[in-house]
Image 1: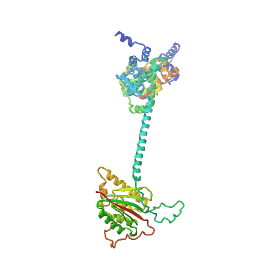
Image 2: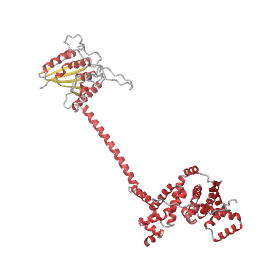
Image 3: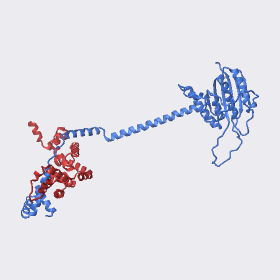
Image 4: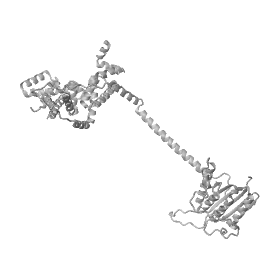
Length: 336
Length: 202
């Protein structure tokens, strides 16, 4: 017999007792008179009985406990409303950002102070004599329409070297001989004033470089050596405490005024650190023969000789177009 | 002893009222009263004991959380089963593909004796007692697998009617469908179930 959905629905409801008394009577009558209906009714009844007879399953014994634990977990999670937890997270994030920004600002401030201490002018320092000038100030700068390449301007070198020594007479004689040997004769103008000698020397950078290098032979006699370098007249100077001949030669050897000042600043900081650092870790570097943190050609150390030395070249006046260099050497008698 | 016996027979509505006032003991009694029936219905619908235990737990937690909102428009019994069946139907829909693959993998042919007994049961001429037939472990497993091959809506009405024993009105209330829909869906479900059983015997 082909299944009839309407008949099946009627028979299924009959099996479940969901028909009205009249419908029940009708189904009973149909089953009694139609074997196919009776057969279908038995099929559906057997199928239903099979499902109904499936053994029931019992819940796990700890289901109640599991429910209790689940509720406790949820209660713990919901002690703080979601909005409160979210706002707490936002506040925490903002606090971290604020701390990071404050740290950055503080770091920039500290760096600014350090840089200022390096480049700030020394209080009470006399401005250096106006000895540094442009190599050719009268030469007009060609107008390249704003496309001119960056040029390094060498306005020369201007420095003041203060040396204090107890062996004043011996040191003065040596410095005087060195100045006469390596400085330009007509520009040597020693000023004698008791326990103070002032030598103003002008010449080329190479000449000044040889002069300061030559002082290395008598350097151990100086109790203190301070070099002040200024970019121009009236400009702030850079002071290198405890300067060494090699450092001075390095500063003078720079080929531009900016490089000279930068080199002086580096040595000023380095010497300052060497004096203030507890372990003086930088001292070995400073005591190195090279005495230099820069890659450069070796400084030609002059041979100490008398005024008749045939190798002397420093009496030659500065050549046309080369920047002038000037160094004021102040020799002081120390009480030590 | 008398008091405990009296408590067991307390009507659901009283226990629900006590639960709504914060009486956890009353809620525990409701859970203990219905936990096996809820678990059995869920297991017959989803076919996995672990999932059934988890879904039963979830259903009771939901009941506890929502007991304050229960207004008594329907009985607590149908409200409880509505929550449990809805959770189970959602779960079955989510994992229907996995379940189908699992069934395919586990599909086994009944052996000769089982097939003969089942065929006799389904036939109308020499019908053995179906209740006695269902005591066979192998036939039980076969019937459960056939049940799981029904579509979820049809499976739900068969389980609620033939396993839980709800009448059509209660089924309509639990599934939130019309009475006529229950009638037609149940009829189609039984017809399909018989066809599935017969196809497994071929």
